[in-house]
Structure formats: structure tokens, C-alpha cells
Image (cartoon, rainbow over all chains, first blue to last red; front, side):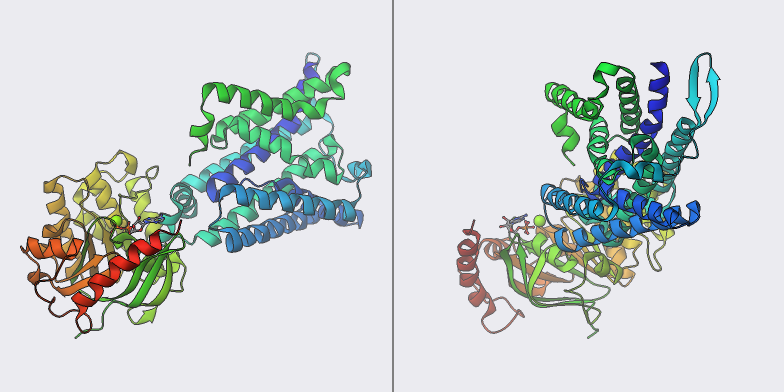
Amino acid sequence: MVNSVIAGLTSGGGYALLGLCVVLTYRLVAVVNFAMTAVGAMGAFIMVSLTDKGWNVWAALVVGALSAALLSGLLGAALVRWFAGHRERTKAAVTVALFVALSAIGLRLFGGNSTGAHRFPNPFGDPVFTVGSVVVPQSVLVSLAFALLITLAVGLLLTRTRIGLKLQALSERPSTAEVVGIPAPRLAVGVWAGVGAITMLVIVLVAPRLGGDFGALSGLISTALAVAMVGAFRSLPLTLAGGLILGCLEGMSSSVDSIQKYQGVVPFLVILVLLWWRSRREVWDTAHSR
Amino acid sequence: MTVPALALEGVGVDRAEVPVIHDVTLDAAPGAVTVILGANGAGKTTLMDGIAGLAKVRSGTIRLDGTPIEKLATFRRARAGLGYVEQARTTFRTLTVEQNLLVSQSGDGDLGTVYKLFPELDKRRNLQAGYLSGGEQQMVVLGRALVTAPKVVLIDEMSLGLAPLVVRRLMTTVGELASMGIAVVLIEQFANLALAAGDHAHVLRKGGVVFSGPCSELRGDDERLHRLYFGGPPLTTPGPSTGPVPGGGATPDAPRNGPQESERP
Ligand SMILES: Nc1ncnc2c1ncn2[C@@H]1O[C@H](COP(=O)(O)OP(=O)(O)O)[C@@H](O)[C@H]1O
Ligand SMILES: [Mg+2]
């Protein structure tokens, strides 16, 4: 049981980052991006297609991440170009459509069965140390370290660099940011590209554990949205905590045989509980008023 | 005459697909304060938003130092030398004073100039702008426009909701901006202070210009201002304004246009 919970942290670190990406996209460019994990999965499968061809893993990783960044940037540019003045819900609907389209294309290109799983490299599978009877796999440490690293990097970028400050200004007052000369469209496309690359890396990280078929990986968006809801699409620390908790819950459910097959329902239950709790506390509306 | 830093010709501006501004022609000279007056709802903010790119320019040309800018994106107009101090003190509240200036800085813009103009801000560099007083926030917004090294600065209702003492202080800096060679366009609903500080004045009513002339012509003439703001039979045709029989021509026209178009839901 404890071992499963600990092992769940491998996914948890990834979920935390996926939630972080959803929240960042929402706060910085005001889009709830349903297509995010489909784009990341595209990049991840481009990577494994290359390693299948005999490419070096690291070179394939870089190319895959760049592909995801490019694809995500293009989608962002399209949204900026054609939907800039539209409501949040319209833009969200556009990304839902993109999710459907990308999922279809991905399944066609990369196949729908779980034969993909073993294609993902899993260099961090060996246990690294044990505490009593608790086994801590190396992948947990890698996952948590990666989550920490990305979070710190994003934090430093936003608070310590001129570009980050401009992004904050854009997030707070989009039209005033443009009035003072901040190139909003360019920055927005940059955010999309960055989020695309990070999502791809996270998906590569969690794929060996989740079984890597395209549908399952692009479907991670439901988990990402559940995690983002823990942070009310606003708070980064709460979002990170939400991701880790969700990973543990999933690990826990996988250790109990009778509920194991319902493991995929965990994000849904988390969303449900949060909605219920929020509607009681009436914080939902205030969290959403940007 | 010098080349106007900002020149509008036959400009029409829409707000949410509804035409609000009709056929506005006016200039702003470098080193001078051009005042735009008008009642609440006359369309002053919409006109400024049109110039800055926040509202859609339906017709006409807007030239900044001779170059048309009406088709440029908002941030490009800013980069081209257009500063805009929006209504309602739009600081980036979560950023510090210094960060507010840094994100806006471009070209030859210099933070030192701002701190010299507003020593109050120098002392509060590292305070989040949301914690500043109203007057200080207005200084941040003015400073933000200044660090873009602008040729033109549009200032919309700077004095709204501020204590008279603070307003007088800010008006002094408006004069200083002009003396730096910047063309200042000052929008005010309450005319007297602006007329005292300004050189040229334009009065807007229902989206059209109903008076253009030197400030001195309106200074202290409350009765005439009232008529210009709210309509009514003109006693005298406004002096050096646009076109033949301008006051008489524009006055009956505008009210008819206004309600008609705003009735479209
Ligand atoms: N966001 C908006 N959508 C539709 N109409 C607007 C909007 N903002 C202002 N208006 C209308 O445009 C007209 C001019 O408003 P505004 O430019 O704010 O005037 P002023 O700044 O002179 O007080 C008013 O009739 C107002 O009702
Ligand atoms: Mg106004």
C-alpha cells in the first residue's frame, strides 16, 4: 500500500506539472487549453518514432520537444490571430475541437493499442533505495526533481526577468499591457510554445508507467484539468499539491484490487468533490473573475 | 507652423460595432497641450481608444509624426511613440513601481527622468503599485507613458477622483511634459483646470467636434461651455473652427446621429 502511494508520486510529479501548464496558460493568455496533452503526446510519439528508427534518445527527445513547441506555438498563433477578441469559452471550445482533431490524427499515425507502451524509454525504473519495507523507485525522485526544477525555472522567469514581468503585466491587464508597448501576440505564442515543450517532456516521463498509447496520453488532459481545479486555475502551489495528491490517490487505488479497475475515475471524483466543495464555499466565482 | 505630432483626419471610431465617433479632424502640436473637453458620454475616451488602437477606427487617418498608424496593432502604436494614460489609473497592481516602469521602457526611455519628475515614486520603487495612493498611481501611469520615449501622450481624465492639491501637482507635470517637446492631449470633463493649462481646445458632443479654437476663447466662459457641452442655439458661431458654419452645422447633426445609432441593440 505505502509502496503504491510512493510509486504514485512518479505520476504525481507529472500531473503537478500538467496542472501547472494549464494554470499558466489560463493566467497568462486566458485560454483553457484542452488540446495541451494531445499536442504533448504528438511530440512524445514523434520522439519514439525516431528512437524506433535508431536515433539517439536525447536527440529524439530534443526533436520531439521542439515539435511539440512548434505545434503548440502554431495553435497559439492561430488563436491569437483569429480569436483574440473572443470570449474565454469560445477559445476553450476551439481547443476542444483541436483536441478531437489531434487525437484522431494521432491515433491514425501512431496506433491505438498499448503496443506503444514499451517503446518509451524507462531508464529510471530500478529501485534506488529502501526505507524499511518501503521501496522508493528512482523514477519518483526524478519526477519530483523535474517538477521542482520546472516550477523554480518558471517562477524565476516570471519574477526575475523582463519578459516574465511583461507576462505578468499581460496577465493582469491585457489591453493596458499593449498600450505600454508590450508585444502581446508574440509573448502569447511564446507561452504556447513553452507549455507545449514542457507538456511533451512530462508525457515522456509518465508514459512508461501509464502504458503509452496515444489515446491514454492525450486523455491526460482530464487529469491536468482536475489538478488545475485544485488550484482554482490560479494558485500555483495548490496546483502542485493537487498533482501530487492525485498521483498518490491513483497509486493507492491501484494497490487495492477491488477498486483497481476504476482507477481512471479518480480525476473525475476529484473534480466532483471540488465542485461540490466550491459551490458550498462560493469561492468558485471569485476564483474565476479575472 | 510645425508639423503636428498627432493629426486626425475624418476619424470615425466604433465601440462594440456601434459607431460612436464621427468625422473628427484635429491636430496636436509638439510642445503644446491640446485640450479635449466634452460632457460625460460625449465620446472622449472612445476617441482616445481609437487613437491608441483599443477601439476600432472605422474611417479616416491618424498620423503620428506624419506616418499613418490607424492600421497598426496597439503595441506598435506605442512603440511608434504614442503614450496613453488611460482613464481610471491602470497600474499593474501586483508589480512594483519600478517593475511597472521596466515593462514599459523602450527606446530612449529613462527611469531616471521619471524619478526626477516624481520624487514620490523614487521613495516607493519597491512597493507594489496596488498599495499606492490614487495620486501616486496616476504618477506611475504617467511615468509608464514617459519611459516609452513618446512623441505624443494622451491623458484621459487624469484628475478624476483626486484631491485638488494632487490635481494641481499633476497639472504642473503635464506642463513639464510639454516643455520636453511632447505633444500632450489632455482630456477633461471639468474644463477650468484644463483650459488654464492648455493651448488649443476641442469640444466633443455626441461623438463629433463642435468647437475648435484657442483655450483662451473658452476660459471662464461657463455659459458658452455649457452650450457646447449640451447643445442649444449658438449665440455666436465658434471662431476658428472647422469648415463653413461649423458650429451650426455640426450641432443639429450630431444629436440626430447619436440616438439613432445607439438604439441598435
Ligand atoms: N464598451 C462599450 N460598449 C458600448 N458602448 C460604449 C462602451 N463604452 C462606451 N460606450 C458608449 O460610447 C459613448 C461614449 O462613451 P465614452 O467614450 O466613454 O465617453 P466619455 O469618455 O466622453 O465620457 C457613450 O454613449 C457610451 O455609452
Ligand atoms: Mg471617458
